Length: 113
Image (cartoon, rainbow, N blue to C red):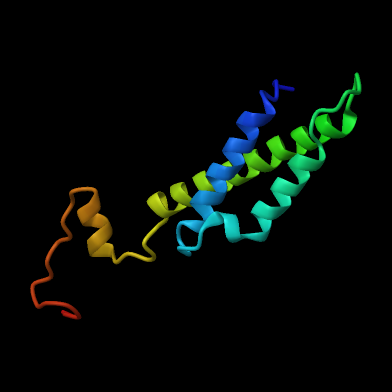
């Protein structure tokens, strides 16, 4: 497993992702329930005088995992919007995409000999 980095870096990354999520709504990210939960959890699991604080390490791991999830979802949505198909294309449009032209029928469309 890769190193987690510092808890402060994870905290800042989570706040950045919350800002991205709330940019569409126009509401400040500090008014959301997710922000209040994160603040409460990080404050409750501060470093103590204990030599080994498993709860703090567990919180940091969960926060880093959640940060990875939020980043991945944001990047997936961006890629999906950029490369998503435009729907069914006609034969003429498909031929034009690759630089070809369809032959013209002498009597127009629906011509029968």
